[in-house]
Amino acid sequence: MQVTMFQSAQGDCLLLSDTGSKTRILVDGGMPDAYTTHVAPTLTKFRKAKKKNIDLLYVSHIDRDHIGGVLRLLDDEVLWRVHEHQKAIGNSAHKPPAALRPPVISAIWHNSFHDQLEDNAAPIEEALAASAPILSASEIEAVRNAGRQQAGLVTSIREAIRVSRRVSPTQLKIPLNAAENGKLLMLRAGRPPIDLGQFRITILGPTKAHLKKLRDDWNKWLETVEGKKAVETLRKAARADEKALGASDFDRLFAVMTLQAEAFGDPGSVTPPNLASLTLLVEEGGKSILLTGDARWDQIVDGLKATGRLSDGQTLAVDVIKVPHHGSEHNVVETTLLDRTVGKHYVFCGNGHSSNPEIEVIELMAKHRLKAPGKFKFWFNSSEAAVSDDEHLAEHMREVERTVRKLANNSGGRMTFKFLETGSSLRVI
Image (cartoon, rainbow, N blue to C red; front, side, top):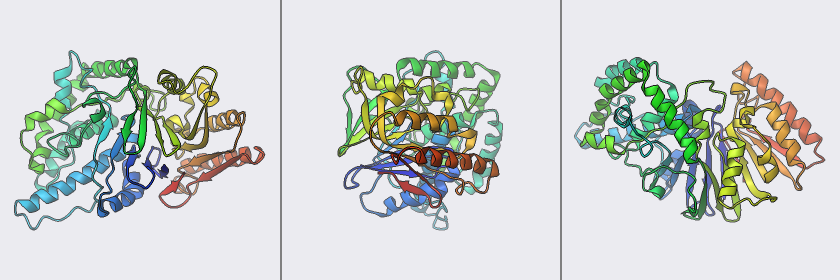
């Protein structure tokens, strides 16, 4: 297994490749602009190489720092599909997009609510027809006007709506949650691991209770004046993209699109979308990685226990742990994850935004890891140098670097570290 971490602003973005680089999993997409600058140049090389798809695009949850880059990727592909459509109908003057074209996306895992909807199923399905960037010059202003009318929507809701729409049969036709026949991916009793090429994937969460909490918050929002206005606005804007794509049978769209909705409240806290993070244990070639999204530490341990991967009184050794929620203290309700899982590599995705990764969490993790035997390494997808154009972020990352160096110096040679200072990515293993 190979694990590559990208510079993705305050967000998550990793690339997993199996032995021989035959199968690839893209883990989230980071922030939109970071995707364009740091992720897209790598992915477009796959498009140019024969038989080098992204076999699975895995979206942990809908927070913008995870899904924003995913939407940018899908939007870029739509721009190219529109260009191909225009050429096919004889519009030889249509210019190719400036965006780099991503590779073929063979499948997507993106949890949403279609099977969880009750009384509000109809308005939610209407909301799924969200407006998207217009794809021909004559329609740009119309969609921009619609976008302005959506100002009251939380950004994450809008982007998750658009992702659901982008992968639908009337647009990009990317299979959604095929491992569960299009239904929600969650921890199910007795569910065996899912094989993808040489990867073996065990779903650790979310549970039905976590998804119910998310659904209830979404339904509550739909009952507000803001929610009702947003549904109406999104429905009016829906047909523009279908026309630009040359798509037909528009009504089929509503039968298949699904959505997660961002909760309102403190974006730094553990919100319902965080709690509904799709968390995975991925294994291949004798290597393993815990993909944790923004889930709480105790949830991950509970998932490992429920799937039989963690027995009472034992610890689980893994090669890589993607640190939950960018190293936020809000996820640390207890330290069981640190005491029950032992990693060789710990990946921190965060650039100082919302003070993540937090100094206290880094210190806590190092302290607990030193209780277990063996050497280990902390990896950071940002640094003071990487955010030097923003003094606030740079100040925090400067303190992170000082703290990590001090911890490593006091570890007796057991702890090492690496910060991404230049370039777009780092190879972890």
